[in-house]
Figure (cartoon, rainbow over the protein chains, first blue to last red):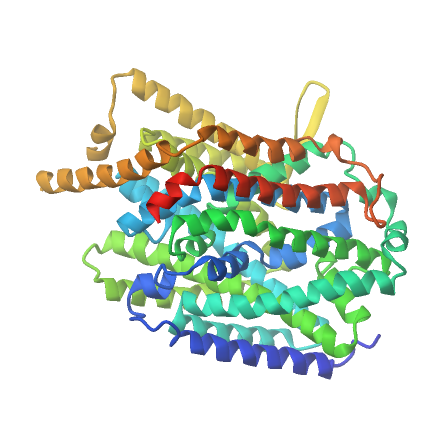
Length: 493
Length: 91
């Protein structure tokens, strides 16, 4: 294998794919034409998407570089623990079915665009809304950076100059999103899905044949990687539950759900989105295939380059280019959605909070500009910071965003939750979670817990959430016992 | 000013009440308990943390969880259909 120079065929295929999505993205501005100065139109596509488009769009927000690159890399490097992504998404869709439709209804009736809009309106608490906004922005930024990183790996795999290609990719994305908003992410998500499904189906058939069948391929994987290591059961389950509860707390996944035309679309998608999870499972298996094929961790990107390297090594050049393009574009869609969602948080819950007289058009303008800052900020961060930072901040983001669960999910399900309790819980959850992350050296999201001699690894987000919920519950109880402090009293405080 | 906020709050309560009232009046609340099934299936890894039996060379650990993913979607579909009466009114 020659990696010395740019692999021309792959580069041409990738360039062609980017040309196609640029055209599609620009067309999106005219598709279902509406006034794109309206935030509902720019940021939520007019809240009008039916089942099929929402399926593509939500698929684009749930399945990201994390699924296409990081999960197979985890299987490649650490083995069975990487499959936590499967139970994680089982939990995710239960949440999506039970909680998100109610939020959709409230958002529809009351014009919410972000989770913080809901918190601000329901609790009438600036501080709680500010906490949720801050967490949302801080947690989304590393997630965008992870998408940039995914594209970087694909570009580097075929020897393209990393800086130039990343800036080009994100300049294109920025122009498209600025002009067409969520409509562009939706249409690109459709194209991306065609690419990624073709890649995955071909890969899971062709690669095992190439390696002499699944049985033979799996026999080359060290036995220790096929099962969970001892005492990792707790880690596995808490990762699944914690991540599953957290996913729909991220602002961009909510953006995908709010763009649908009815809460029943959201419910029905919880039935059909698991189809993507099966695809993700198949991709995770490719992590094992990379081991069987003798792929070595890359000098620069470590295990994360495993699947891109596998595609590049196994397939003819043109199809390798196709596969790498699908992973890169699979990162662009969520990057666009995250940038839009983070920008909305800024425009509605920071800017408008500070300048209540901002007109709706001006709000959209602020949001559009903020989305540019998010994208280029992420590219700058990835190019400037050591790559381990990207992955580690993403892990920490998962811990932090989970701490907004009482304010958002409990707030939706139970109206009497006092803002003060949720805010105290958030403070404790963030504090304890961050303490545990720092103690773990900030490069792992799990830590050892136990009583006496019985110790187990757990995903830090979950004990932090437990502390959060205990405080939230305790303070709620005290407030209610202390004299029936009703929602009104808190609302006016 | 106070009247204004009270008015907003009343409207808010009404809109929330509508949603929650509607959700409460949904048929067959017991159907939600079906969601326990996929959770139970994955919540205790020692249950499925093994290689054999393999299917077409794929370890049990992997294919079992892929099956649970599909099962979870199916259970969600069943719950959706069981609670379907309210949907007809709303749409």
